[in-house]
Image (cartoon, rainbow, N blue to C red; front, side, top):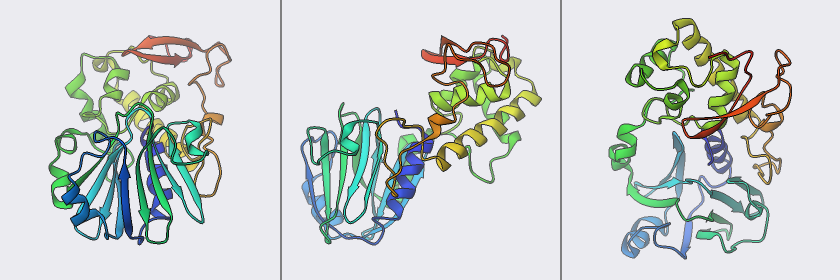
Length: 288
């Protein structure tokens, strides 16, 4: 699943390419992927100019000049691919990012007046693009429940630590993955930040010391900012607005490195299952 850095990469890439463009046509092959009444599409999408692109956790919001927003969730296998004079694609790593479009995974195609197109591809059909009045987006159940953004300037270490009190009897990894605690943290960055902070992912939250929480706060922000700088963690067919592939996995210290040496102490990295997810740790640096 695309994580916060990947979705932020989508936001930044599309912001350079589609803001100011006017939507001329919309096609879909699946009502679940594009659950919008035709009357709404004609009134609020067609002829609308893209005014902004925002992100909250792993959700994208494409704001329109009609005061409606196309709220987009990539879910497990979603991608957004722009094709015009420039090319951009990000999301789930598959050949659809770089192949001919539309293809069998294309669920929605938006065409702009300059004939460039934005394709929403989704192999498993879990993702969606919903047209919602902009002033109602903040009232969506997800938006009401989701935790703070870990990279916001105002989000302090003290606020970070306080968020975990609601999950004091669960593992620290399960709490990190809980979107109501902190927004946008997925499996890769949970493993990377816990390794950086030298915390075992199975540790119960109420055993984590203030100093460890501070280290985790620092590491989480470091790895997520690095991932954004490197274009996300997709290590296959990711292509950004400059035609470069995402490269964060080249810098991963522990994720998907089982059997290799820990870059900090040399101990062999192992893989466990924690919170129902494959989890990578150094058994020496991250003692339970």
